[in-house]
Length: 162
Image (cartoon, rainbow, N blue to C red; front, side):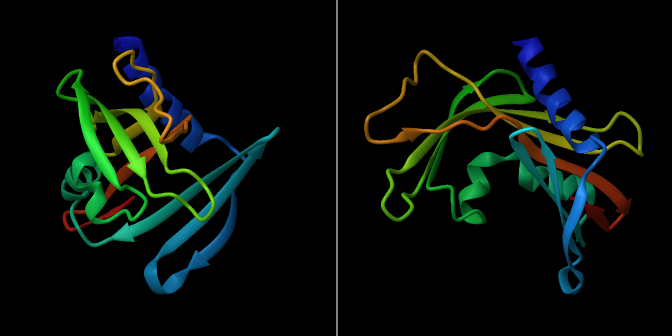
């Protein structure tokens, strides 16, 4: 489990630092930048936003997936299946069906890391895992997240970049 947790954080960090990201859109009125990265048949997206809250507050809000239904319309339900450690939890997430499709579900590992040094980010890394106690259900289309998450950099005592 320690390896899976480490590789979850490492995969997100590696993806975010890859060279070759192309900025595709900037929304100046809300300080949002959107990048894409293509490698073979894989298309990745990176969204950056400046927010006016301290980095530790953003980390607290983004790391608690049980609160995510309040701000992410794609999360229909979110249940903690296993608290692996204080920094790792396995969740079962369901999303509402899109037109003409079955609702989706995910079993995800969420790994959290606080910065060791001031210039390092808070990290919330997400990836799909399999869990014997949560096999696929016929009522959902089991989906997979290869690598996702948030890196939160402190800009000042009252703002950060997510």
